[in-house]
View 1 (tube, rainbow, N blue to C red):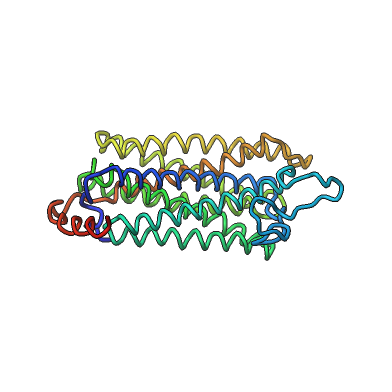
View 2: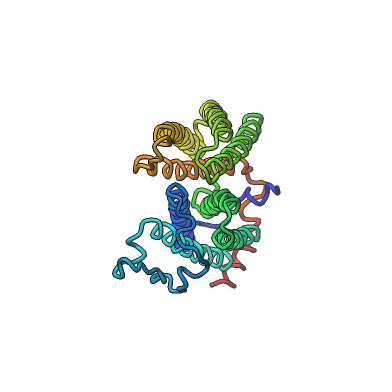
Length: 338
């Protein structure tokens, strides 16, 4: 990775840059909501509640599907929880797609960083790919594609979180960039290992939730063991930041966020597993189970996002050139993009 790309302040943070950042944050928020809704769909086994795609019961009107219940002609699609879950997931996915299109175009139009514009279009390509995966999961009635769809969603959320960080005032004004040295090198290694292990844990969770025949004990054992590994790595990152970078406000906040989120995630995962074991013999899916398992998915995404933020903050290098060196280029870009 070219360190100089991330090493200088891009431009003074004006109201237009702030609006773009808030739009990126909004996109990340709705992406998190989409992942949470997808977790709800999987928990209640509603992935095939709408059997066709891209239409819904033969209708291409997103707000009026072709659903019809001969026993209750007055019933609408939102009156049936599985259909509401699946079709609502599609509507929310379309919203995230539109937001991503807007974000990519906004970045291309206003951001002078070439790598950032490429990143915006990478997010656009990934959200299109994710939408196609979701559709093929329905047309092929494939649990394997459902698992890939779930794992890819976390990658897309991480990318949107990274874009939100790169467009933030803290990043553009180069606030609290850590000093190079052995402690920072170790933090980088720790955070990268944490991301890799955490994503592996997410994949295990996806496989645990998509077997098609209840809980798979082999994945459950490995997933529970992985929870301890991830928690240990997060704790190691937190201790390292407190020891060497306590004065760095951004790193400190990210480390605290990781610590609190992993504690919540561990508690949710344990609770969801115990409730599932208790209810499996009577084939009962209670509201508590649905809430716990859905919250576990959402919190996993939050943990991934906070870890991505800390890792990117650690990977950033101090300025290798004065900001004035890029001022002419930025001024020319501003003139041509007004």
